[in-house]
Amino acid sequence: MFLPIAYNDGRPIEDEKFDALEQILLRHFRGFTFQRREFPMKGVWQGKTRLYYDPVVMIIILDVRRDGSSAFVTRLKAHLLEQFDQEDILITETPQRVF
Image (cartoon, rainbow, N blue to C red; front, side):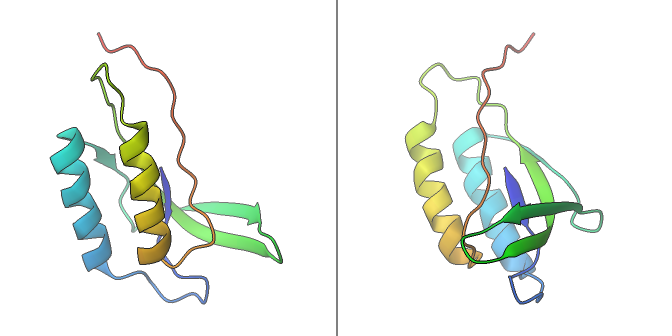
């Protein structure tokens, strides 16, 4: 999951929104790895009407349950789009094998 740390107008997204997301992820997945916001990556992507340059952080979640969480992640993305006031948020899913 690639999350912006600033709104499109450049204002930083409030810590409380990240704290709330951490609680949601912890309840559902029981753990995650979150990149520190002090060291963001630079995301560049073409939106519908403009080019975006976003400072972003990555959240990595290993979901080792067999039933998957696609429906949960779909609802979570809709929630994040609203909470973070974004046109889009990149969330990827890759099958993993944990040893």
